[in-house]
Length: 484
Ligand SMILES: *Cc1c(COP(=O)(O)O)cnc(C)c1O
Image (cartoon, rainbow, N blue to C red; front, side, top):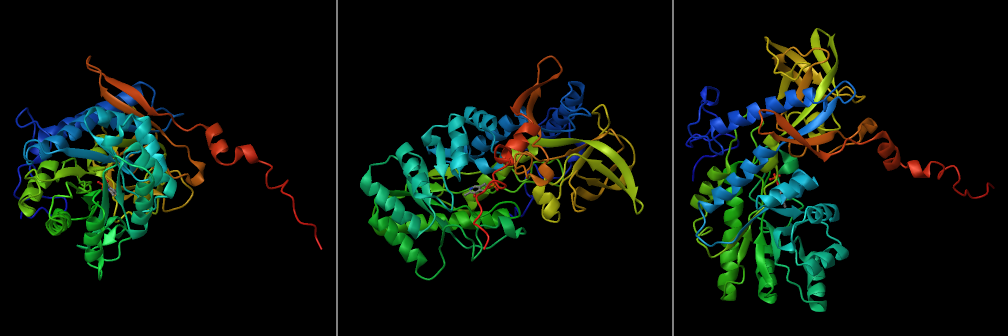
């Protein structure tokens, strides 16, 4: 097995290596330095166009931007990576983990690229349906599904992975009451261990997800569950997310594969016909390089789990962050530039409301900041140590602490890079700060940039309405018991 730990690969053709010296047309495919450089150029063009076209302005000081070209390219790279390793004819469903970027136009774009949806709540299922995803392209995986959710999923024919024995009981009852086309499986936790970020480590000994496979009696229970239910045809494991080394992810997939082989052997037929190997490919937040790539991961799986791709099993994947992160940028105007204790501080409009994880856990979720001038052009000038702060009323509201970049001045723009997943689509309503507008962009074919609205900025009326505005006097008129 290769040594593809975390975000670097040493024996691969597209690591972090000589990214800066890259250029020209050679090898301009997914995951190559030239491909990454094109994405950076598109981003710079989009920031400038957003200022020129008035999306960014003093009265509209923050937007989220999504690179439509880049999203399409990542979807293509994902499909190509698995097409290159699976036996011809193997059914493969790539289901985008909707929680990474829960935006209907994004789901529709991915659908057009042949990517389905992994949903984990009634809201996410509603988004997938609004995007027009067919049930065959949808997988439901949440750890807390209600009976009503399960009934709806089975009625629609959506694939469901049961999280635990109690959920399987509920599915049993539903299967007795009505036939369903839903492919059904069980989620197991191979307990292979965690990565560098506790909160996104799903395969620790005590993770809340799935059936903990190494616990006493658990493996036997899983085998029996399949023996007793001929309609259980899938097995699911999602062993990690950001911070998990690829080798550990591969170990989790290997554990699921080995279990499927054992179950099928003991039942005496290929009852499990599909393995859902989850998502979790980590993203490199340290530079513009795409690393690791889907191709590296697919090759690693082929080496680490011989048999996985030989055509006996259909495959489902559930990548989220790795499909979208590098294609999103939050751009915020520098309202004030000040100095405190000798440290320059740029006070911007992007903080905890759009970068919640970074603000509360900066060590685990550092963001790179790009500096642009008031016209949206990349800022030149010597790198200066500075803080980039958000608009919220607490001192920890920092997008970046001690970042080194050209000095941000009043009227400039600060760009939080690689924020296409789990950032601006995950608004946190601190200080009743408005959800920013989100716009997709693409070259317009005439040398400019065209924008499309993905989500309108939240209005003040919406903020009031979502904060109980329709019930202003509900508490003052509440009937109170007579005083004694
Ligand atoms: C969050 C999640 C994913 C996606 O994880 P990423 O790190 O965004 O790729 C996939 N499957 C399940 C079950 C998840 O909970």
